[in-house]
Length: 163
Image (cartoon, rainbow, N blue to C red; front, top):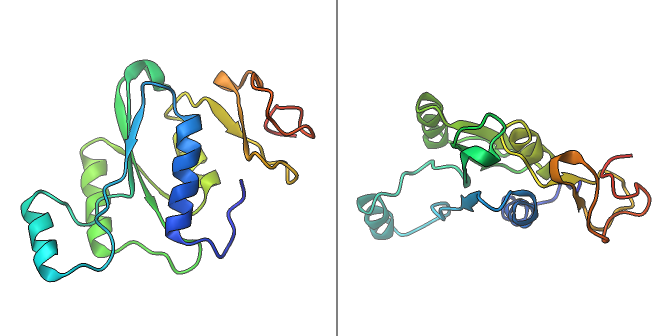
């Protein structure tokens, strides 16, 4: 799946979540905390009192040890930004620094390809993206990169995910 310049952060988030539903091993779980956007001051105060951390990344992924590449449970945080003009806020920079200090994985992604690049060395993903331009599915099921075992895949790359 190729990132298109006009894709908004919300559209990218939806693409990533759809891919995570297919790509993550069954033991992994992801979550999005909806703390972005413009809100009334009273509601922001309520969120803060309830524990919301402003600058929290868009996605958090929890990985059990048997699904991680290093054999120990871990967590991955991903901040998504649009390709042009998307930059970290001071709150996001502070949260990144605190999460890294706590030993978490943290990554900034501006495309689905970058999300896969962040996760590939950490998680035993169930899919490889198909980078063939004619592929309508965008990804193929490939446990441990051993080839496609589902029938729906790009016929031009023969289900390998890459030409």
